[in-house]
Image (spheres, rainbow, N blue to C red):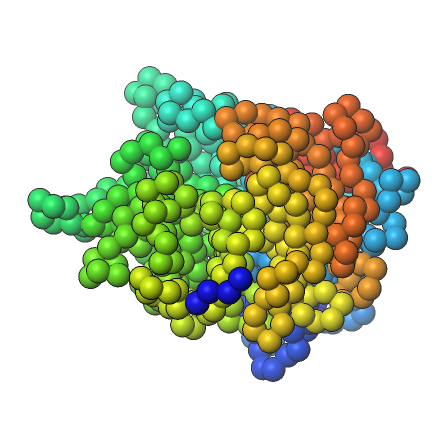
Length: 584
């Protein structure tokens, strides 16, 4: 179709599986705002899930089968960010930010507090865990993964030396994997996911044996409190599926030499999901989605599902600019890049598609735009961006290199119509999309979608009666730099619910084209209601400069601070000035 609940305090011990993902499901007929608040405070986790104090007598809430019910007055809001873009809907929103407002995020009151040095470039979003017991003391902790295959836990409030640090092995040199887009080699490329209830961190990494010249892609399960591998971890990632070629049936084997694991990991009901594309379309490759289940008691990390996007073709990678696959609590959604498209004609390949998968990775529904063929030929893949699920609705929104924003009904995605798309809505939103939009309910309860595409301004669109007004309700005058595709803004949004004067869009963007290059960046805070600039980090060398832009990595906003990954081998921490402003 064309058109222009309160979570209680609990001790940080291994407990019930799947709470974080289960609690993100919509219940009953909540208002949109209540549901958005639930997504931010429950799906992401809050300080109220964790421990208060440093002794054994920690306050513990009552579990009612779905969420933890408060055992007493809530502490100040401190929202956990346990997964890429905050929640399994990938809204990028923290709706319980009570410290930062449009009044105090100003050039005189807000700025750089300190930095957290690491040993490599950062491609993974930093994750935040409130009030967690680490090495005998309770901390607000920031978990940071570097491309050098190192993982760190830092005190998120004070910085300083790491609470723990582990290295998972030698990285693969970029010359070996034939990519100049990543100039220092490949180690941890995707955003991990944290299972707070069970005290686990899931992540993937690539390692290299220089003597044998072999690459290995592995899935690790680390103990959140120490960083140590759990029993049964890691496992080497392997997979096969039955496919078809012109010569007949064949077995397709996952090959780590060709496959890149870029999208953030998804944790859903105790299973972790990994998605794969390629390094700069180095052939041959396929899109893969793999499911694993960890059993701590048995010490086993077992593969429990395999899906290949193009079993009777080629390509069809899933990378989404690093955006993770998303979920409504039951099904899984993703967008596939350019590759073979045969499913509309009786085949099995889903290039250039929106996909809906069951937890076992069987296909439930799909949508392929009518313009897939010229897009395929021009390398204008749909899957350069990732979708976002709009809370309170059945709608998915996302787009790719052509800049078209597609809105799809998750219950009836539309399949393929060569004459006219059977989706809800689509319009030309920008030039090219990488990563994904972010969603905020606004002060009116009407969802607002924000997107900063390449060579374009940041824009916001408002949903009303199940459709977006395709004329932006607000936009900036600042454009991302000229370049092929990569110069885009990586976004997050924070607010204190729908309270006026609290909605802020946070955006990190390059000051030059980052394609095949490491370039400086600039960081913005903008009023989410008007997109007026509240604050920016200033030019290179200024007091708030963060250094080199981390491509497509969104900021992490919580507890009155903003954590920004960089390609200058550090996370820069911003907040209200006057508290902990020593640069480490």
